[in-house]
Amino acid sequence: MLAMSTAVKDVMTTRVIWVKKSASFRELASTLREHKVSAFPVVDAAGKVIGVVSEADLLTKEALYGEEPGVIEGILHHKDQEKARGVTAGELMTAPPITIRPDASVEDAARLMYVRKVKRLPVVDANNHLVGIVSRSDLLAVFDRTDAEIRKEILTELLVKEFTVNPDDFTVTVKDGVVTLKGTPETSEVGREIVGKVRHVQGVVAVRDRLSYPPTEYPARTYFPIPH
Image (tube, rainbow, N blue to C red):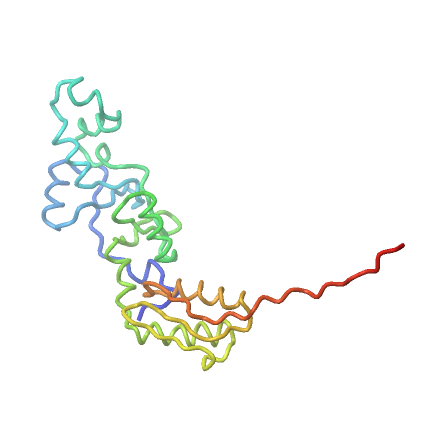
């Protein structure tokens, strides 16, 4: 069962297809077809990740190599022109690689993929050695949790252990990953914090806030007589 503390190491693939910097274009194309992957890390002699080669990198060469300068190359970035002339993984790869640590949260991984527009991330240890790879589909595994598992975590781990409130004061229902919260929190601040925490429970698709917030209390005003 994947819980709210799910880390990259819990969903990553540890059997990773990788290539050395010296791998030829033909080896790269053959490896992509044989293992039915769309990209793989490139490692140096010490086993450290130095780049990533993807289908897009190989297609750059296939599409541009041999074109007359000024026809297509003139409107392309200089790096694409260099890739078109590359013949090894070291020359074709995208570098530096975008990597992530195994203890990072799946939320961090998803955010990094979204911001950097990548479909997978090599997972590296403190010495930048390859330990796995995580893809978009791996991250979506957190949504495989059942509604019952999600509800149990909200009640026991969040309400009881983290907020130390009586779970009987709240009604928590989960349907297809959508959580509906009802009840009256001690304060509005506590209620908003509970809703925020529930949003980050793994497997939660959305939160419907139906809490009855207590009225905001304002400090009593002190009046002073106006001197005459």
